[in-house]
Length: 279
Image (cartoon, rainbow, N blue to C red; front, side):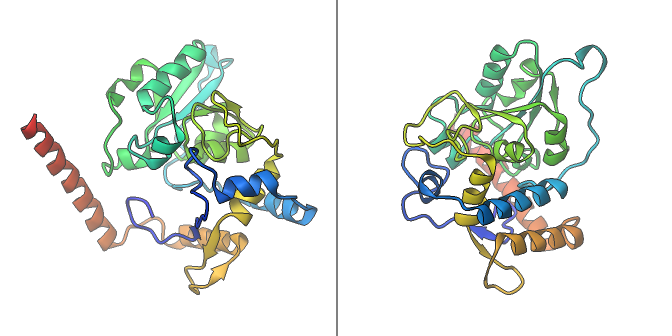
C-alpha cells in the first residue's frame, strides 16, 4: 500500500466500479444511496469516528505537532488547509473533471477567499521524494500564506477552520472532525449534503448524516483482513491492530523499505534525466 508497500488492513473490492472513480457508479455509491442504516450500525459508526479522532489517526499517520494557527492581526481570518495531491493519481484522473493541478486549486481557493489564511500541505510522498511535484508547484507560495511539510495531518485538521480539496482523503478526515469541507472535485464523500461542492453528480441524490456516511465508507464497503491472523476481521479490530502497529513499529522503517525508497528515488532521477536528454 502506497510508495512504501505497507500491507493494508482494508481492501476495496467493487463489482460496479471503484470508489474513487466518479465517472461511473460504484458499490460504495450504491451502498450510500440505498442502505437503510439502523441504530446499531449508526452507533458503531459513531464509536469508530470517536476513536479515530481521539487517537489522531489519518491516512499517513506521520508528522509533528510543531505548528500553531496564526495569531494577532490574522486571528480573525478563516484558516484554510489545502492538501496537495500526486497529480498522476487515479483519483484525480477519474474524480476531478475540472481542476487537476495543485497550483490551479490554490489559485481557485485564493480567488474565492482573498482574505483567508491559506495553508498548503504538499503530499507526503512528494515531500519524501517518492513522487514528482505537481506542474509549477514551486510557485505555490504565491497563492498561499504558508507551506507546511512535516506537520501531522490530524493535528492540522484540529487547528484549521476549513479544508478545500480536489479529491484528497483529508477531506473525509476533516468531516470526521466536524470541519467545513469544500470540494473542487468529486471524491466519494462529496454530493451527500455534508460538503460544499463546486461540482454536482446527479447519481448522488440522497442527503446523509455524517454517521451514515461513516457506516457506508468504513463498515459496509471495505473488506478487512487481519495482519495478525490473516483472516477476515471487523473495522474495530483493524483499528486495534493499527494502533498497536503505530505504538510498536511505526517509528522505524525496515531495511527493505529503506532500500525501496532509495530505488524509487533513483528511478525518478533517471527518468528525469532521460526526459531532459530527449528534450
